[in-house]
Image (cartoon, rainbow, N blue to C red):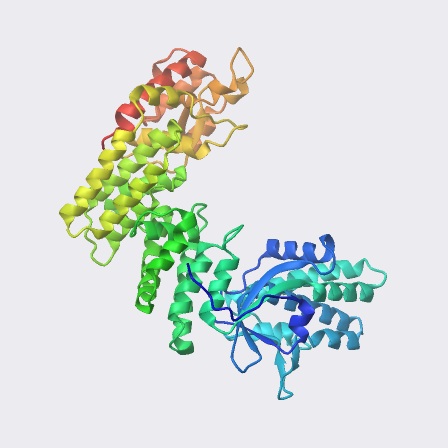
Length: 569
């Protein structure tokens, strides 16, 4: 546990104390860029304007004071301070547009005030050059020719426009808009914080971590960023900018994807588990802090995060990478795991990608493909079909294999590690009887029930590929052999019509031809295609109803276990 010298005393302050007092606030270049989105701003506006009394508490803020200076470097509170300053700028501009020059200038003094040398200085500044914030928002009047350039400035522009829209909407419906604006000004100034500052930057960051270690924990990504930047901050502004850019580029790789499973906090956890001893998410930062104690260790961690993040994204979002033809099987397994939304193997997937495409590029195609295919088939059987809950032991098993693969010295050792994990997965797979029973009741797809749509397509594609590997699987749609308009007729229910036993994958043109035609007509159309649409002997049937659907499900279940998703690979 870290101890902090008692060189601080928490102080309850109002926003007016902060903005009118003698202090100036600097956002260090290491801090995360302004990132409040529409939801954050809506919540803040509702809290301040509508839902709470004057003097509403908006949480602690932490800073470290520069000795002999009125400057306070903000450690925690950047988003709130910046948003409050933008609100002041909007209220000032609105008052000026109403001809209330004196009131507008009264608000502007919260944004710009004279320092000890009687020179005007912005109350809130950024260590990174931010011309739009100062000239386009804080300056009175704002310079409308100054346009947002960086991504952070775009976020500031959106925040200004959103707050401006909210203020305008309120002003338009008020008989006395000036009174309303000054009322909001007073509510903003009355907001309270617990202000904590320290003369030592390291201790200020420890306080920051401690304050956020209870209740809803501060995210690991923020804590780790503070840890790394604190270790790497020496070397001047140029070095600091390099470090900041590295960190932001790492985050951007994860956050620029639309994949629902990609998350920067999970990436950091899985990156750690792929190298170090297993630790639960809630204990991750403590473990990292115990290991990353020196500047070289922090540099190593930041560099490796930057290298591995692309491997991680490629593993969890395989469409983010161009795969050579010889790796088509690898890509399909990763695509399947992405469709399953399975994250337990993620540390091992990262370790595999690193071993394959890293600097040594030493992992051969065969062991990699076999292992990914085994993981895919295991989770299809165990997680998707039988819907069994994996214990923490499975996650630890994957993490252990990831770690051993990372530390493996040669191809024989790498092959052994992957062979062992495949063997362990096969041992854990459900029995044939259990799988067949679960498969029969697992999948359902109708216009009214679409939750399994992607899984159904995956299952049918896999059957088609196993039957004829060269089959083109693009532009295929799901066909209900027993039409959906039969639901509720002749004792036909949705379970029969939506069952996997009643479904085929066909081209859009064939699907249109089949429409809701009688079974005999559908048989003729399918027979004329000369393609492997008929999985399970549909064309051999004289008629088609719930009993035939049931028999086909049993056939597909057996084929799934014995062939398509057979283990071992």
